[in-house]
Length: 433
Ligand SMILES: Cc1cc2nc3c(=O)[nH]c(=O)nc-3n(C[C@H](O)[C@H](O)[C@H](O)COP(=O)(O)OP(=O)(O)OC[C@H]3O[C@@H](n4cnc5c(N)ncnc54)[C@H](O)[C@@H]3O)c2cc1C
Image 1 (cartoon, rainbow, N blue to C red):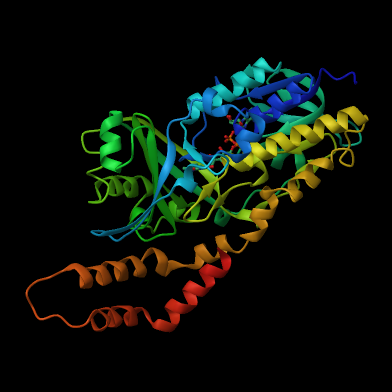
Image 2 (cartoon, rainbow, N blue to C red):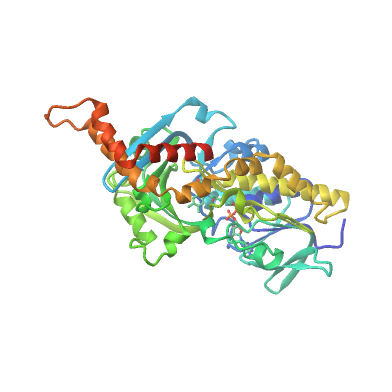
């Protein structure tokens, strides 16, 4: 329709970019993907598990094709202090229900599969080169990208550069996220035979578990630990706020937190004898709804984490399903605008409409207060794990001394925290969650 080199250029081949490229190429548009990694997934990291609903919408047979690790059928949440751990363990057939199920993935193979799907649909790829700038015409409309020596033009540019929003800041004028809205994640992958993983996590053959930890995983700072079972490995890591990571007065650097987490009595037996085969670090946007920037521009759309689309609820971490859905919606809106011959911001407004009508913006809006509640909730990471340890010790330690009724053993422990404070904290959390 235009004299541009391509109908659509996609910057970045993570979940958002590859899906956008696949959807646009499948609709018959000429698509170029520029990925700075030497291959898709080379630089990407997740915990992690993907909730499958948005993937299924794009790839109805993904279960047969995608390099999935394990279907997650066991959910565990642990509260830990330096020496104790109390875990909630949940399993139900509903966790495996089609459309509500989730899978652990490793981003190297997973992102390469997504890129292959985009290429099979007709998208062209340039890897190993970063887009440095978006180019604009005299009216300010984005008309393509500058990557190295090359200027390549397109009617629509979809920016899916992930959490490090350098292009969006430099070329689209979006604000740099605040330090309080960002966290840093570090992760290691430990190899173990499939049967050993199943025995240690008490899961049936081929199924898997997701486990989140609050408290000592981050030495009482805001954040948490995670563990996901893959086919023949375990992904283990933690997420801490940038302010914790950058605080020179913090006596435990984040890498030491990870070492201590691995040596915690609740974690060490799970990875005993396992070989560490991968270590990675990555930022995570955690500001939620309030950090979503402008994502529709003249000639350009922003998708995935570049648009701040990520949620850490403490019991759920979601970014990939948002990235997949936003990539799909960006591509659909771009195709619609190309067909209508109007790729201005007004012509591309279908993206905003789709996003606002979908779970993406609705969920972020519903839980908009949670990041702030978590940031301010010191006791959840310090005092309450100690309280949990004392309560469960009171229940389970039998030493031959005459015992009082359970309520008499437990109430003094709970009262130490202050009943009013506890009730207020619980109410605040429940209202935000
Ligand atoms: C520790 C950790 C744990 C997480 N756990 C989970 C989880 O369990 N479940 C979940 O759903 N989400 C999780 N997330 C979040 C999830 O990983 C992200 O939300 C998701 O990967 C975002 O996808 P994206 O496509 O927007 O960005 P990315 O996957 O980061 O992809 C961006 C791509 O753009 C490329 N790129 C960047 N700049 C340029 C440029 N200038 N030119 C060319 N290419 C460029 C990058 O190389 C990359 O390939 C976790 C994140 C972290 C860090």
